[in-house]
Length: 337
Length: 287
Image 1 (spheres, chains in turn orange, purple):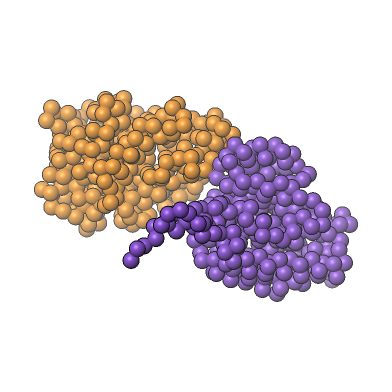
Image 2 (cartoon, rainbow over the protein chains, first blue to last red; image 1 turned 30 degrees about the vertical axis):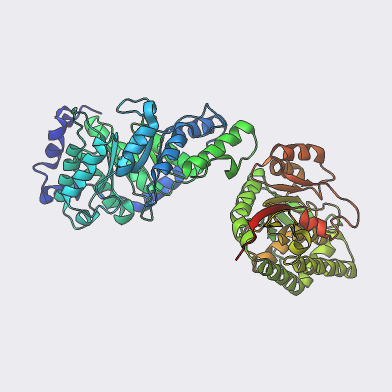
């Protein structure tokens, strides 16, 4: 599968070789519009079918612990305070204080100015580039609208990286994308990726938010996914959570298919992060099934799949308590967030 | 040519909607002569869980409504029951084998109890609350507030509609929301009551009716951590001591089973059983 000549290219050259020239609007349009269209009915039927799998008993137990370990625990409100971020971090470290065996979440996701607070609150539990511990993800580039000049966006990113963010969640310029200015979107992602470089030369992980709720069609989602991966995104993320509809199963499935195709083409594994609108364990389990069936179970690790969610964790904890105690639990038994 | 009658499938009433049981099960409801009357949904523990969730969601709005408004909404139910007398009489006669006069008397009594309890909505606080005398310049007020989500096992032997009304109405008066397991053998009037509630002003989720086996569902409600109180009025035939023990694990208020003709007889104590007394101190202003 990885015997394609593309796999032998240097990552920087790979995209250009695939596009067949420089990343101009014309070249990108020719490439992206050459991608086969999506059968929307088929995609939705496939997603609905994957959502009917029955996951029970020990499989459910495994699924619930896996979901917790894949959550980017998120607070992205204008009313966020350092205190709110500290309590979020406390919850990330010990989601269920009544059960020390409960796994930790993958990361906390905050606005750029809260990164320092999150890093301090995590202390020795901060992943800081290692695979152990909890990462700090920062939304940047004028999140959630992305309506700012490139200089401001890059400063936003550098600021978060300097404050200790391990992951940067950027938004693409949907206006430019929908207007067909693919080159501009591409160049922006490349520039943001470059701004993710730390002083010591290591890189913060870059998640590219497509905001699929504003892209209107599955074909656009697929094109935007290709564009983000070609430009060097480490993760593609569905939504900011500020626009409805946020993550849906069919949209995530179509993005996973792009990730699968890219892996076949180059051997490189790209991550996927559905965000927004996933509130129940039942929904989250559907996503696990979709990932396992589309790209494979090896994707069910924090470096390749995340849930962007705030209220999901509580529902998963209630399910976990039900499985542990044998009776239904209630919202009085998890923290308010 | 004879017309083929279309029998009705009675579904659950959860969150203001009429879903089938999540389990897909139904059971046959028989007349007192043993003839097939209808299929009713056989609720499962997950239906009970969904009902508790709906009741929890509805609690804020119902408990937060003014007492006067709650009274009006409850009174409106009595008005609608009056308009559906014929249907209820028919169901009670076929299910319980009562005469038309006895069935009519039962619905009369059920409507009168709704009205009696509806009247208490903006009055029970005056009776149960108090301005306490304290040795200082403070107002000290005790006020009853709703306990929360109340799970009820409806009377299983008594008259089906009257028993159900007698059990749920007092819990609703104070602003509790209710999950009730209906009379297993005579569930038809319970679901018809659900249809009345759905077309009344009661917000969805305030009353949730699950039909099926109380023996199967009650233990899940008794142990459910998000249920605040348990009315075992119709649980006399179950292992209700075990249910009480389960309920104690999460500190629920519990009412014991009652049997006989005057089970769940109308009383202020039934309203107050599912209230919590809150006492507040407030300084007396000098100016």
